[in-house]
Amino acid sequence: SAMRQVEPISREVDRLRKTEEKDGQPIGRMQYTLKGRTFKSVQINAIGRIYGDNGDLIIEHLSRNPLAVLPIVYQRLKQKDGEWRKNKVEIAETWRRIQEVNYEGSFDQRCYFRRKQKEAAFMSDVLVEECQDVQSFLNEGKKQMETGAEFALACMDTSALMFQPHLSIYLNPDSMSHYHAIKLIIQQVVNRTTRNQSDRERVGRVWAEFVVPFFDYPPEWVANEVRESYRGKVNNNRVVRFAAGQKVQTAFGEGIIKEYVRGANGSDGRYNVKLSFGDASLLPSAILHGISGDALPKYVRHDGVMVKEDELYKSTNGSADKDRSRHKLDNRFKVLFGSQTVYVFLRLFTMLVSMLDDLKAIANTADVDEDPSEQYYNPLRPPIEPSTSDTETTTAAATTTTKSTRLNYDGIMACLKNVVCGTMEFKEYEGFCRRISQQQVHNMASLPKLVEKCAIALVHVAKEDLVLTLHDYGQYTGMDPAQVRSYSLATTKEAVYRIQYDLDDGKLFFSYVPESEDMMTAPPQELAGDDMDMDDDDDSIHVEDEEEDLRAVKRQKQE
Image 1 (tube, rainbow, N blue to C red):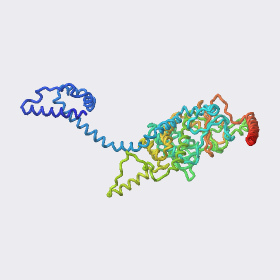
Image 2 (cartoon, one colour):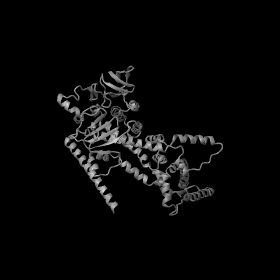
Image 3 (cartoon, one colour):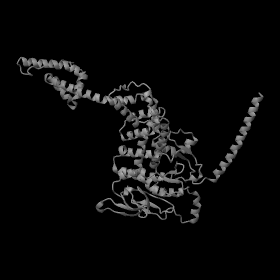
Image 4 (spheres, rainbow, N blue to C red):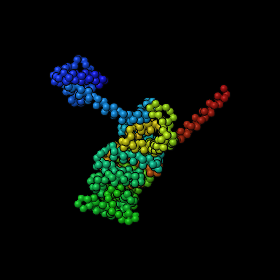
């Protein structure tokens, strides 16, 4: 619009200039002014915009001396028009590709609201309320978010010693979703959540010394990240110094530390470790975590150093220890009393693992070679016109695209990793999910947000710097939960969440036990008796109901 308005006036200015030169008059001797309302506000704003901060000055000179300024302004408008048209051509393909991917999604109006409803379940306030107010969800029928938690007043498995209100989540211990969840969170932490190398090192130690031994994961899942995040210093409140004689898990297998040798001139120290195949000199980043056992000494960290605790969990009263033996957990359970930050991270992590398991089941049923989006009309899709000379090239490109975007679980994980790393737009990922399942798009599209929440929660756990010390007290199996709780509360008053994992069944329990309340590790005898009486009454009620039903059937036949 500005160019169309300026162009005829610019030609008239050129004609006037040539006329002055032809008459032999000096250029600029005649003073010209623009007529009122020659340029409207749209054209004036366009001229000012192309000159940026100097726009007001150019417009002022244009009104004073249009004969000299107007041709320059016109050339500038032509230059910017050419640049903008070139940029439009370059990004037109990107716009068309995004619009083509989102064409079908534009008709799915409920997907956005379903995804937001799903993401609302990832909020820490929702997760904390579920654990602290279990009885409201059971007795009052309080509406539950889609978090996958099951509520109960007591666990039916008496070996779990879980006799207070709690919630539980089932995790398949043999599923590879655990591995994929860890890798996604690691990529999110490295690429998006934090750029601080110190925080990344703390997170790496949380992976190695808490998550891996607590869930009994293979150490090689996190060994690479622990090595890359290590900053080269031991006993710096981030990397603990293990004790001589302590049995540890290294990146090369189990071993026993013989000694720690400090480096010369401030260089990195090394551990001399006795491995199954010989002695080795290892960097601190190769030592992942300590190994606990009934016959092994117990170690707890103090001021960044592992200290041997011979009297840990030992009672001076033999009879008291004998009475407490019936309240000890089975060896398949691991228990931890953590803070609210630890609880929120584990809830989000278990939700991610569960959703990836569900995603795998959905994707495997939709594993097809043909893209379903090719079966319906998309006006934004460019027509395919293969030429005889480029047939082989077109076929090869199509084959490569098909392999890289295969419609199965591996294809979704590849796209999800690209979204986490920032190499794929969210809308493109959502369009790919819609090709897998149109009914479960909102669940798959909420995964990037869940990964982000998990990474943020993990960084908060690392900065809190409590979980590793609390895990030192709870890493042993066959322990009395009351004893573990007493040691944890002595470390911090925030250890009010009982977190217990069944290594065999893959069931994770969460219970809120404030310091002011007693923790039940045995069923009260009076409650057991009441339950038995209640069962007898229920049986008599069922018999009476059956007799009443038989009498009703007989009356109907007589009528």
